[in-house]
Image 1: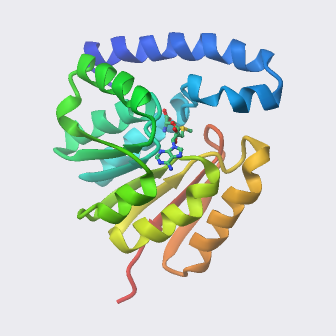
Image 2 (image 1 turned 120 degrees about the vertical axis):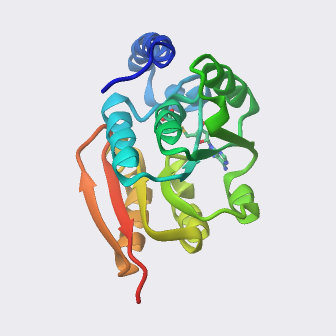
Amino acid sequence: MTKDSKFLQVLAAYDERMQSEDEIMKSLPVVEGMKRRDEFLLSVGEDAAVFMNTLLKSAKSKTILEIGTSYGYSTLWLAEAARENDGIVITLEADETKVTYAKHRLYEAGLSKYVDFRVGDALALMKEAKETFDFVLVDVWKELYLPCFELFYPKLKNKAWVVADNMIFPTQSIEETKRYQNRIRNTGVFSSVLLPIGSGMELSQYEQIK
Ligand SMILES: C[S@@+](CC[C@H](N)C(=O)[O-])C[C@H]1O[C@@H](n2cnc3c(N)ncnc32)[C@H](O)[C@@H]1O
């Protein structure tokens, strides 16, 4: 993994924030943690990020959709691959404060040019989107996985990759993520596998019926 120094500096800042947040989150009762969830990065974590970054580069994916920017940790990794692929990350987030932070970090990493930040409700933004996608990361609140899928499915290019996070953890949202998993597997047009990376990722590749 060769990454430039600006990327590594920004990554170190995220890692520092992540470590202190992990301690706070561990000390909070589940209900309190849920109430305060907007304070935290809630990132996919490094293993999942490295996996997606590598996959994007091998697949040479150009039009990358991220549903759930949060504070931009996963966006950083997707954008680093987009730069190599001469592509773009379109990232959707409802919370403007988080987007402001993410924009600042991506600017520091020298990757702003490769990210199109769209602020608002992901479902509305996806309905408006004119693009078709080579890669989608689904990492929004879990009750939205299924409605999000119905909106991006018609916008997938042939052989597009779709990654959905939190298929294994947290266990409280397993019912919702399972519903997404059943839906994508039952279409019959995706090859899909559950990977024990990070919080569990459903990796699916779309293959158009000829
Ligand atoms: C798990 S976090 C994303 C983490 C991020 N992908 C990362 O790895 O750094 C989920 C994000 O989805 C956002 N979100 C929730 N509902 C949304 C909606 N309807 N439209 C857009 N964003 C939404 C939340 O504000 C939150 O920041």
